[in-house]
Image 1 (cartoon, helix red, strand yellow):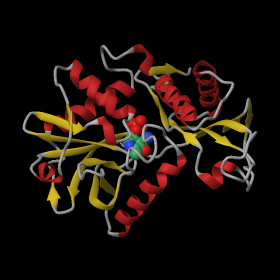
Image 2 (cartoon, rainbow, N blue to C red):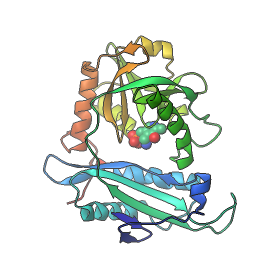
Image 3 (cartoon, rainbow, N blue to C red):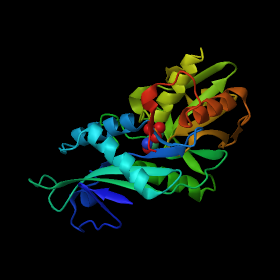
Length: 290
Ligand code: PMP
């Protein structure tokens, strides 16, 4: 199920000469919708994702005529039409035909695709990447731009080749940054800590974890984290729309406690948040579809 520039359609073709295909300037989002405890479907943090989408489009100088509210309505209709109980939403804004980096008057398109989503893993293994995360002075790393994912792809592919699930990338200062598509958290004793926002893509799931832990009286430390400190940690978990909250079994030679109470607590809180069972969660986190 795809919505493109105002119309629902089944399959779509993009021009082989599309500007975004050649120069990587498309911006996109990834969201999930779930069957909540009351049996009704809801999209998790739809408004926040669409605000980030439009902010990314603005970074890339792409103007569209749809507001966050317009796209929220489209997403709800698209999920309704999909007939899926749970799934994934991929909105994207991209430039159409036009070769030449700074060609003028290239069309800008907006699409929202609904896809099925299978059951995820229960835990993952990581290796430290030989690739470093993009320098924050080389691009706007807060924007979710297709071209940024070359860095993620190379790191993840290298990790897979060495037999593990994903890569942990360091930033240009050799601090821990994130995995190819998720943010990372660590636990040492009672303390939960995560890399500061400066050199990472600050995910919405990361925000969900920080906000819900704070509401439960546990403040997450956001700061620089070295690999040496990681090796002293008791537990590590990755968070993202796709991963949700996923314990890390192993990073290189270091094994973590996947059943650490802090990790189980975060997993539990997140599951309640996405399924409407978390008391005190902000109302706008769930957009009901049915
Ligand atoms: N870091 C990177 C590099 C990502 O691609 C993603 C996925 N969008 C995340 C972190 C997690 O972001 P979110 O929680 O918003 O899905």
